[in-house]
Length: 118
Image (cartoon, rainbow, N blue to C red):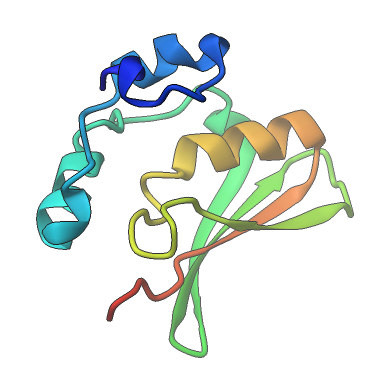
């Protein structure tokens, strides 16, 4: 995406923005926006995943993914994926949750909450 479209953008973020597709019209077609975002996430194992026990659960109809470091930590955190409550899911945020669980040495519970407008 062209950083010049955002005159107040911090210049340090311009290189990151350049890697992203133009999604200014994305909210007009959420199905297409969600599909496009999934193509940006690499598949396969994530570095550091082998240090965790990862379990998919469902609690009261809500899918969860629990990341447990094998260190025996009792620290924990709730992780709500990004996407403005209308984009994103457990798989898209898997790498970030793995990284947080390892770096913070905490059990991370990632929630696959219902997206708007559904």
